[in-house]
Length: 381
Image 1 (tube, rainbow, N blue to C red):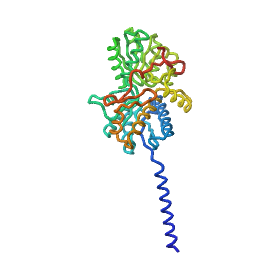
Image 2 (tube, rainbow, N blue to C red):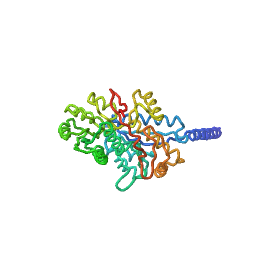
Image 3 (cartoon, helix red, strand yellow):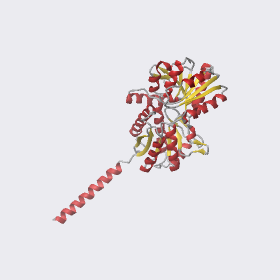
């Protein structure tokens, strides 16, 4: 009797095991993608909308069949706006088995992670404008691609607007002393000279500073037609307030690092005559942008900003590569697919990558935006 019961139990176990195995095979495992962003620390006003855009992208991709039937999942972690933390997180995520890494919110964190992913041969999408992370002195890094317009494109679009709209012939530059600000200022200087615009002064400020009076006074003494500002997060809002308090009323032409609600809240009325690089047309959106903005507004009850579009487009790009990879997720296979240049329609641009261009964007993707109350809108043409 006991032998019969044991035999029956063994048979039942076999049936249950087979059924559970069938159920497991019927539910494909998600493609895991690491996302290292700054949602605490000084860059949180930029990182939080990036997270929103990425979560929304995951839901939409999976709602439309995922990657050839497999769901996608972004494993989002906080680097606290610290490069060393970002590097450690990248090492941990690679060890855990993620297929791709998206990073990041800041130039320093993106660069730190790039050193880790390049060594591992893993695809990384960066959402910052610093082209030198993939276009290095020793050549193009095969596995690093960019979903944000480069500083080169931003400076070209910004200075061309100032020259066309205001007749700008001479500028002075103020910038964050970090790599993002310094590198952007150097690029803006080179492009200004190419465009026949004189650069009369160049001043740096610490990212945690609150008084910029000496730098501003030195720049004002050169009598520029406009001030070019290269910085990000909320410190530039304090710079703008002091520029206006010191009596400079001419245009301020800024990098896209100020395209956030936080900047507008801090700058207040001082943001008049401020012009920023943007990636979203506020009044004439294309169909992809319109659908994205409507979904973002419905999901989060707030207007979409560039930083949300950065991660949405990064997710769109990696999804396109994965769909063409026939189940492969290694960095070389995915990079080879992207470098073939098939157009990928995103919110900010239609990306066309190549072996020498891992940004894939063109000058017509640059928008110029201005504050209007508590929102950003298209600048007058």
